Structures are given as C-alpha cells and as structure tokens.
Length: 389
Ligand code: FAD
Ligand code: DHB
Image (cartoon, rainbow, N blue to C red; front, side):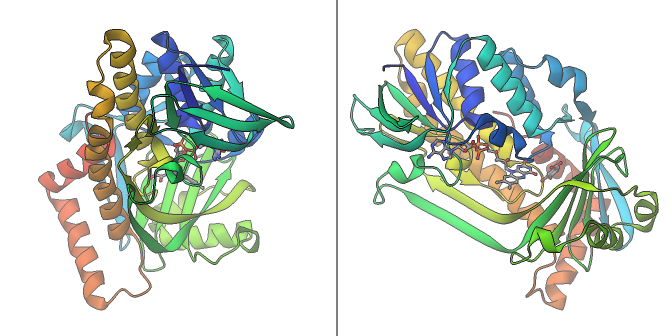
C-alpha cells in the first residue's frame, strides 16, 4: 500500500488531521489500535476552545456541534465558601463551547466514513520505519496478516502510550515531566447540572469540579488519591464528598443520581521536544500531557493539528517545506504557554499532601487576587478561552 500521510492513532488529533488533509486533497490512512466502540466509549474532555471549533468548521464537521454545543462566556471559582465569576467576554473576544470529546470524535468518524477515508481499527504492532529518511514506511498487523504502507510522512497521533514518540531516538528526544501527587475521580450522571456554568472549587478537603455535557448530563470530578480504585467509591460516597467541597448553595442545589461512568485519571505535566523527527510529526498527547484543570489537553492537540495541517498543505500545494520545518518550533511555543496555564491552575486549586500553612496562605492570596483584580482575571480568561494560533 502507499499513501501520502500515515496517521497513527484514531483519537481526536488523528481524525481531525485526516479530515483537514482530505479537504486539501491530501490522502491519509488512519491506523487505530482499538475498536471504534472502544474509542467512542472513553469519556474525556468537555470544554472546547474557539480554535478547535473553527478547525471543525474548516473540516466541514461542525453542524451538530453548533446545534448541540453550549456556549459559555464565564466560569465560577469557589474557595472558603465564597464564589466569584470570571467573565470571558469582559476580557477577550471569545467564549468556549461545552461539547464532549466523545461527540467530537463521533462527528469526525462519521465525516471520515462519508468521505470514504481509509481507517483501520484493531491493528497490532504498529512500527514506524526509516522516519529519518525520505522513504519512510509503517508496518502493522491486521486480521492476522502483516501489512506495509509506504508514505511521504507519518503523523504520530497515538496518545501518551503510543509508539510514535518512542520512535524518536533517545539521544534526540528531551522529555520534561511533573507528576502530581493526586488524581481526579470523575463521574458522569444523567442528572441536570448543578449550575449553568462550570464551578471549579478549592476546598480544604481537596479540589472539585462541576461540569456538564448537556441539560440532563452532568460531569463531576473530585481530587482523590492516585492509589484509589474507582470501584471502591460508591455513588453515595462520591456525592457526599462532592457536596462537602462545593459552596453550600451549590451543595443544596445538587441533583444526584446513579453514575453511568466512573474513572480515575492521574495528573501529569509532560512535554517531549522536538515534536518532529525527519518525516515523523507528533501531535497531541503523543507529545504532551497537561493536568486536566482548565481543559487544555484536547485543545492543545487541536493547535498541533492546525500547525501540521498548514505545513503539509504548504508542502503539497506550493512545494514549500517551511511549514513542516518550523512545525515543532511553532507547536512547542504554544504548548509551553498552555502547560504554564494548566500547571498554574492545578497548583492554585488542589490540596497538596505536603502543603504547609504558608503554601495554603499563598493559594488563598492568589485566589483573592484573582477575585479582586481585573487584570488577574483578564490573564486567566485569555488562557482559558485559548491563546491565538
Ligand atoms: P488520544 O485521545 O489518546 O488518542 C490516541 C489514539 O491512538 C487512541 O485512540 C489510541 O487507542 C490510539 N493508539 C495508541 N497507541 C497506538 C498504537 N500503537 N497504534 C495505533 N493506535 C494507537 N482533557 C481535557 O481537556 N479535559 C478532560 O477532562 C480530560 N480528561 C481526560 C481523561 C483521561 C483518562 C485521559 C487519558 C485524558 C483526558 N484528557 C482531558 C485529555 C484529552 O482527552 C486528550 O488531550 C485528548 O484525548 C488527546 O487526543 P489525542 O488524539 O492526541 O490522543
Ligand atoms: C471538564 C474537564 C476539565 O478538565 C475542565 O477543566 C473542565 C471541564 C469536563 O470534562 O467537562
């Protein structure tokens, strides 16, 4: 087989890139290790920046998103039983859209089907060969057979545990990492959201987040120990703990019900440099991970896809390699700013096991500054709605 771009990974990064390339007449084959149902069963991000929404529009995949997504122009921050609002439109010209990653992925699969895109599910042993040369190829197992695809480029969109990043030689790769000493226990429930805007809460018992997917689907998170097992958290125990961590008026308004999904995510900051090696380009979680506070994971994956799509269009359209040559530098410049925001917001909102009384005073002072200062709110709003590409 031969194609122009092999996309390793059929998550949101790989699928979005595939659709954008298709619009430019650039062929791709997507290789996904899991089944389609498995990919669509993962509950992950819920808040989309304008940049991602615009890219879905450019890919021609935004009809359902526009009809069913909810525009949010502010968010609430709670601490010490106090709550204040950060208004995005007072400080920026943008808003965010509440629309689940699952729905984004479903829309992208539907679009890929409709345009006849080649997607291989449940492939095994994907290996990237000769990425450092002008004749790269990818091998994999499919239905018990070995297959080979020769290509011009490989997009490594296979998430944190994928093979692409590890293909970059260890002496070229520089990795930066910070692991946080807690996780997030999340549940999804078919109940009306406690509030029409998200509530991020810093409490002495740990962080909590009230989010949503639609008018009758709520997503809640509480900070938990990394060693916790979701099965050992009953729904009642989750609701009780959430109530204790959010302001009293929200706790009273909370409508509870059975969880339809419950899982624990670790919190990590991670960046791999460079994001390109020869003809291999890393996109999204394959290259970087943020702690989820502030919902930047999926959105940063989208900005990588934007830079790579531009670079590949420039290469195939004008024979100009400037965009792909500067891909890593451009993507990383934005990645690091987003890392800073996710690290700052995570550090501000969580209870750290080794936190001293002084550290806690610093958190309180920073929260008070954010509550009282227009400039501090403007800085937060700028990152929350998403930095320009
Ligand atoms: P992924 O979504 O990880 O997709 C990679 C794909 O590659 C997967 O489908 C995988 O099966 C496939 N793959 C892996 N290895 C191979 C291989 N060897 N061969 C072929 N295919 C392979 N972000 C937020 O903003 N808010 C959140 O609340 C949030 N919650 C999260 C919860 C969890 C448990 C996780 C893991 C992430 C969460 N994120 C969240 C982050 C966000 O979901 C990711 O940033 C986003 O999914 C990145 O998309 P991606 O396509 O780059 O990677
Ligand atoms: C969601 C997740 C986040 O990390 C966040 O900051 C906001 C919303 C969510 O899953 O809804």
